[in-house]
Amino acid sequence: MSFEKGTVEGVDFTGKNSVKKKIEHLFLSNVNKIVTRDEIQSVVKNEKTGNVPENWHQRLSELRTDDGYTILSKRDDKSLKTSEYVMTDAPKRDKVNKRLVPTATAWEKVLKRANYSCEWEADGIRCNLHEGDIDPIGGGTVRLQADHLRPHSSGDTVDVDDPDAWQALCGRHQVMKKNYWDSKTGKMNVVAILQAAGKKDKQAAYEFLKTYFEGE
Picture 1 (cartoon, rainbow, N blue to C red):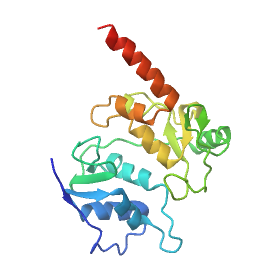
Picture 2 (cartoon, rainbow, N blue to C red):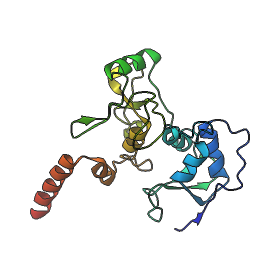
Picture 3 (cartoon, helix red, strand yellow):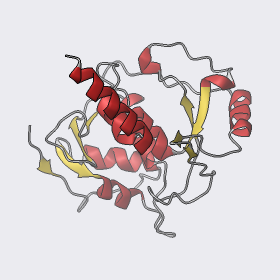
Picture 4 (cartoon, rainbow, N blue to C red):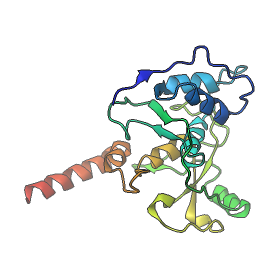
């Protein structure tokens, strides 16, 4: 499927004060057209500081999961490039996933355990970005997000009172983890997992696959 290129030009964001509302309005003004990462960031950028809020990834995710909009990315449609998105229909889906969050007490315990920093780890190296830091890769100010250790798409019941069921992630790494699960099928996106894995884990996977296919 091919899509036309959308545009920010001429879109009036008057009254759209939150990051989420601005992103929603951008897509609703470009239904069935391509909206890029750069265009989203240009819309949500702080006019005074020029900073892009790091949580724009999370707000985009909420439009899909909480609000029920159908927004495609490269993993949904191979004709799209990385960092291209398309809202195919303006109407929201009737049934959307219920987003759970830990209780305030559980979340505080998670933050203390995490030393108030992102717990994402790859190749033994932890992200360690703190709340309020500037993300050197994604840009913008870091806001720590409560993330299920096992995504609710897997069908597991999540205990909102149990700090061990949650981890603190920066927005960039939470979005990266979400890409591990296909929201349509609930199955793991193995290729996305390998893309995000460190070199050591990629090598281990490569050696395993060589042995696997040699045995056929």
